[in-house]
Image (cartoon, rainbow, N blue to C red):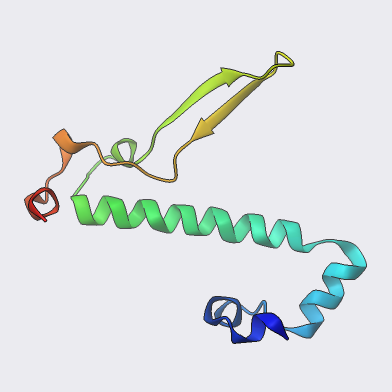
Length: 95
């Protein structure tokens, strides 16, 4: 199987033939991938928080709301950000 050689897929159990059989039968993999993406985004922000020494999560996040062409509102956000004035770990700024 193509994904069995990928350490990440193997580590989280997505290298299983049964998982792909279930995906083909019901299309449920999209939810699994969405949750993996959310988890990776949260982990990335936690790394930013820890590395920069932030005490408030708002310094590692950023988003804005805009209107689509159809007039609906949508929220766009970054996976993470650095608020330079709030970095407590000075080695982050010098490296």
